Length: 180
Image (tube, rainbow, N blue to C red):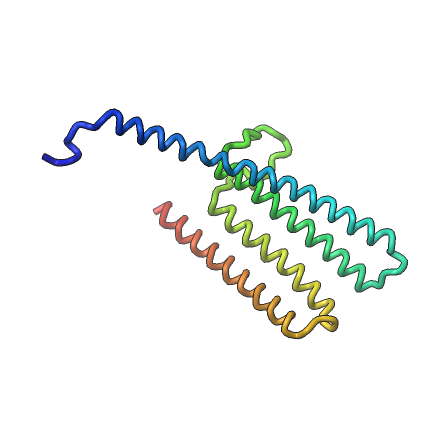
Protein backbone atom coordinates (compact mmCIF):
# COMPACT_ATOMS: atom_id res chain seq x y z
CA UNK A 1 0.00 0.00 0.00
CA UNK A 2 1.33 3.46 -0.94
CA UNK A 3 2.07 5.77 2.08
CA UNK A 4 -0.09 8.57 0.65
CA UNK A 5 -3.12 6.27 0.55
CA UNK A 6 -2.89 5.56 4.30
CA UNK A 7 -5.42 7.43 6.44
CA UNK A 8 -4.01 10.61 8.01
CA UNK A 9 -3.81 10.84 11.79
CA UNK A 10 -5.99 13.84 12.84
CA UNK A 11 -3.72 14.48 15.85
CA UNK A 12 -0.69 14.65 13.54
CA UNK A 13 -2.51 17.20 11.35
CA UNK A 14 -3.37 19.28 14.44
CA UNK A 15 0.30 19.30 15.49
CA UNK A 16 1.34 20.45 12.00
CA UNK A 17 -1.32 23.15 12.05
CA UNK A 18 -0.24 24.37 15.50
CA UNK A 19 3.41 24.38 14.45
CA UNK A 20 2.53 26.34 11.32
CA UNK A 21 0.65 28.91 13.42
CA UNK A 22 3.61 29.30 15.81
CA UNK A 23 6.03 29.73 12.93
CA UNK A 24 3.73 32.26 11.25
CA UNK A 25 3.25 34.15 14.52
CA UNK A 26 7.05 34.30 15.04
CA UNK A 27 7.27 37.08 12.45
CA UNK A 28 6.04 39.41 15.22
CA UNK A 29 9.36 38.86 17.02
CA UNK A 30 10.77 41.31 14.47
CA UNK A 31 8.53 44.11 15.80
CA UNK A 32 10.98 45.24 18.54
CA UNK A 33 13.71 45.34 15.89
CA UNK A 34 11.68 47.68 13.67
CA UNK A 35 10.73 49.82 16.68
CA UNK A 36 14.44 50.01 17.53
CA UNK A 37 15.14 51.28 14.01
CA UNK A 38 12.59 54.05 14.62
CA UNK A 39 14.56 55.03 17.74
CA UNK A 40 17.74 55.06 15.63
CA UNK A 41 15.91 57.39 13.18
CA UNK A 42 15.48 59.75 16.14
CA UNK A 43 19.20 59.52 16.88
CA UNK A 44 20.01 60.46 13.28
CA UNK A 45 17.51 63.34 13.36
CA UNK A 46 19.28 64.63 16.47
CA UNK A 47 22.71 64.13 14.85
CA UNK A 48 21.55 66.05 11.75
CA UNK A 49 20.19 68.98 13.77
CA UNK A 50 23.29 69.12 15.99
CA UNK A 51 25.62 69.13 12.95
CA UNK A 52 23.49 71.78 11.22
CA UNK A 53 23.48 73.95 14.35
CA UNK A 54 27.26 73.57 14.68
CA UNK A 55 27.77 74.57 11.05
CA UNK A 56 25.43 77.57 11.26
CA UNK A 57 26.84 78.82 14.55
CA UNK A 58 30.44 78.63 13.25
CA UNK A 59 29.75 79.79 9.69
CA UNK A 60 32.10 82.80 9.82
CA UNK A 61 35.07 80.67 10.94
CA UNK A 62 34.60 77.80 8.47
CA UNK A 63 36.48 77.58 5.20
CA UNK A 64 34.71 76.68 1.97
CA UNK A 65 36.16 73.16 2.14
CA UNK A 66 34.96 72.74 5.73
CA UNK A 67 31.48 73.90 4.72
CA UNK A 68 31.48 71.48 1.78
CA UNK A 69 32.57 68.62 4.05
CA UNK A 70 29.90 69.64 6.58
CA UNK A 71 27.21 69.66 3.90
CA UNK A 72 28.36 66.23 2.67
CA UNK A 73 28.18 65.03 6.29
CA UNK A 74 24.58 66.28 6.49
CA UNK A 75 23.74 64.56 3.20
CA UNK A 76 25.33 61.39 4.57
CA UNK A 77 23.06 61.53 7.63
CA UNK A 78 20.03 62.03 5.36
CA UNK A 79 21.02 59.07 3.17
CA UNK A 80 21.46 56.82 6.21
CA UNK A 81 18.10 57.99 7.57
CA UNK A 82 16.51 57.17 4.19
CA UNK A 83 18.10 53.73 4.34
CA UNK A 84 16.69 53.23 7.84
CA UNK A 85 13.25 54.30 6.65
CA UNK A 86 13.35 51.89 3.70
CA UNK A 87 14.39 49.01 5.94
CA UNK A 88 11.82 49.85 8.61
CA UNK A 89 8.80 50.46 6.39
CA UNK A 90 9.69 48.03 3.61
CA UNK A 91 10.85 45.28 5.93
CA UNK A 92 7.82 45.54 8.20
CA UNK A 93 5.47 45.59 5.19
CA UNK A 94 7.26 42.65 3.53
CA UNK A 95 8.00 40.39 6.47
CA UNK A 96 5.68 41.24 9.37
CA UNK A 97 2.33 42.75 8.43
CA UNK A 98 0.63 45.17 6.05
CA UNK A 99 0.70 48.80 7.12
CA UNK A 100 -2.84 49.37 5.78
CA UNK A 101 -2.20 52.90 4.55
CA UNK A 102 -3.40 52.37 0.97
CA UNK A 103 -5.62 55.46 0.90
CA UNK A 104 -3.22 57.73 2.82
CA UNK A 105 -2.19 60.76 0.72
CA UNK A 106 1.40 60.61 2.02
CA UNK A 107 1.98 56.95 1.18
CA UNK A 108 5.38 56.62 -0.54
CA UNK A 109 5.05 55.58 -4.20
CA UNK A 110 7.62 52.78 -3.84
CA UNK A 111 5.57 51.09 -1.12
CA UNK A 112 2.96 49.98 -3.66
CA UNK A 113 5.36 47.48 -5.22
CA UNK A 114 7.71 46.61 -2.38
CA UNK A 115 8.83 43.02 -1.95
CA UNK A 116 12.00 41.39 -0.69
CA UNK A 117 13.64 41.55 -4.11
CA UNK A 118 12.83 45.23 -4.73
CA UNK A 119 13.93 46.03 -1.18
CA UNK A 120 17.33 44.37 -1.75
CA UNK A 121 17.95 46.39 -4.92
CA UNK A 122 16.84 49.66 -3.28
CA UNK A 123 19.01 48.98 -0.24
CA UNK A 124 22.05 48.21 -2.35
CA UNK A 125 21.54 51.46 -4.28
CA UNK A 126 21.21 53.37 -1.00
CA UNK A 127 24.44 51.81 0.29
CA UNK A 128 26.21 52.82 -2.93
CA UNK A 129 24.89 56.37 -2.53
CA UNK A 130 26.16 56.53 1.07
CA UNK A 131 29.50 55.11 -0.01
CA UNK A 132 29.68 57.70 -2.81
CA UNK A 133 29.20 60.52 -0.29
CA UNK A 134 31.99 59.09 1.89
CA UNK A 135 34.23 58.72 -1.14
CA UNK A 136 33.59 62.30 -2.18
CA UNK A 137 34.44 63.46 1.35
CA UNK A 138 37.64 61.41 1.15
CA UNK A 139 38.64 62.91 -2.21
CA UNK A 140 37.97 66.44 -0.99
CA UNK A 141 40.08 65.75 2.08
CA UNK A 142 42.63 63.49 0.30
CA UNK A 143 45.66 65.53 1.33
CA UNK A 144 44.83 64.84 5.00
CA UNK A 145 44.43 61.06 4.65
CA UNK A 146 46.87 58.17 4.20
CA UNK A 147 46.95 56.71 0.69
CA UNK A 148 46.01 53.21 1.91
CA UNK A 149 42.80 54.61 3.50
CA UNK A 150 41.77 56.13 0.18
CA UNK A 151 42.60 52.89 -1.64
CA UNK A 152 40.53 50.77 0.78
CA UNK A 153 37.53 53.13 0.55
CA UNK A 154 37.69 52.99 -3.23
CA UNK A 155 37.94 49.19 -3.23
CA UNK A 156 35.00 48.90 -0.83
CA UNK A 157 32.95 51.23 -3.01
CA UNK A 158 33.76 49.11 -6.06
CA UNK A 159 32.77 45.98 -4.11
CA UNK A 160 29.42 47.63 -3.28
CA UNK A 161 28.94 48.42 -6.98
CA UNK A 162 29.74 44.88 -8.09
CA UNK A 163 27.44 43.47 -5.40
CA UNK A 164 24.58 45.75 -6.46
CA UNK A 165 25.01 44.78 -10.10
CA UNK A 166 25.01 41.10 -9.12
CA UNK A 167 21.86 41.54 -7.00
CA UNK A 168 20.07 43.45 -9.77
CA UNK A 169 21.13 40.90 -12.40
CA UNK A 170 20.02 37.98 -10.22
CA UNK A 171 16.72 39.73 -9.58
CA UNK A 172 16.27 40.26 -13.32
CA UNK A 173 16.95 36.58 -14.01
CA UNK A 174 14.53 35.48 -11.30
CA UNK A 175 11.85 37.87 -12.59
CA UNK A 176 12.27 36.60 -16.16
CA UNK A 177 12.11 32.99 -14.95
CA UNK A 178 9.03 33.73 -12.83
CA UNK A 179 7.20 35.42 -15.74
CA UNK A 180 8.12 32.60 -18.14
